[in-house]
Length: 250
Image (cartoon, rainbow, N blue to C red; front, side, top):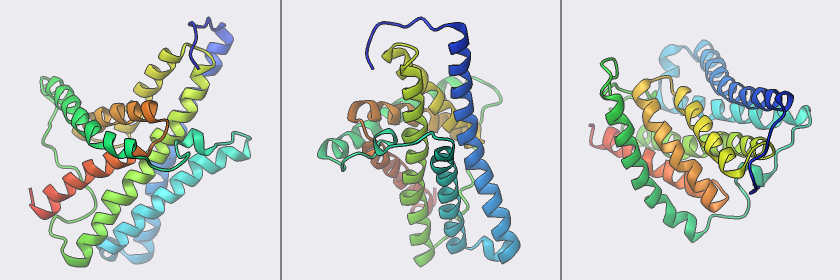
């Protein structure tokens, strides 16, 4: 990948920009459409009251991620855009390095998120304390709490890492590295993937927070070549949030 900066003809530059833009739209649309389609279908079949129960909310989340991943990863295969495990960042198995880097990355994410949030706090319309709707009541107990934990701390991190730091980042790096220097490709890929990840959360304070996290997650993929460390960091972040919200009730 590494090499001197490349000069891109205007036509190729337009094609590259179109490919990158198309990937961003494809991922965002797949995630949002999957959530809406599965959500409305289940609410129609089950009724709104039953659909709001933790078990069904968990099933909804799992199905939404499965459909989104199928659209993002499998559909392009039909138009001959194949995806390998290496591009998804899933080659090999998690290592001790992956495990060790996760808490280090978590600290880096907290510091970066605090810095970016402080900047946004200067804007009068930004509300850093706005509550994020996760689909579960803060009063879930017993089995319902276990279901919520599996959904938020296990399923969501794995699915989101495969989609964003896996497929999207891998494809973007592959396309951009053929047109620009390796460093430029990395910077643009990290920024665009993180921006997309923040936008799909549809909430400013959450978007800023996960934008910072995504920068660190992309960095971990660059360091390790896989998304395993990123998955562990994402689980750690969601696990801490789960404990604060659903155990301590903060």
